[in-house]
Length: 115
Image 1 (cartoon, rainbow, N blue to C red):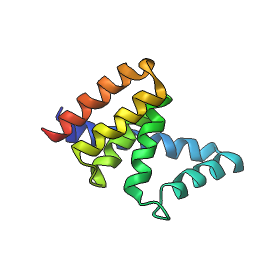
Image 2: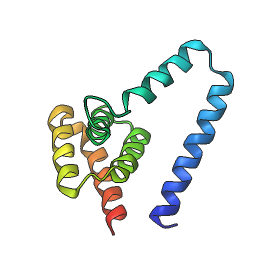
Image 3: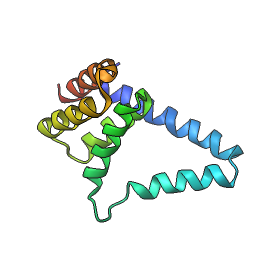
Image 4: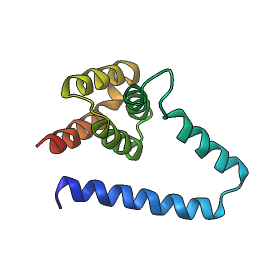
């Protein structure tokens, strides 16, 4: 599978899982998802900045699914290679050496998207 197919598969699975989750979700879960959706909308900070912040937080928290999602979004909103490198540097400084395996995978996925 090429990177475009992998991205499509990832986003399709994410959407399908969210549909199942929302089928059973109560008010608290739905409210949390609403906060998440609204937090990443254009506001005082541009969407691009918010996605880069999401990528840093996801890396520090070592959530590979979240890293994958924010990598996709960062590419969609036009994050450059230089911006990506700086963002991941911040994630490493904040998260420490335990984030290195996640950095490796993130850089590999970023590289595949750029090839």
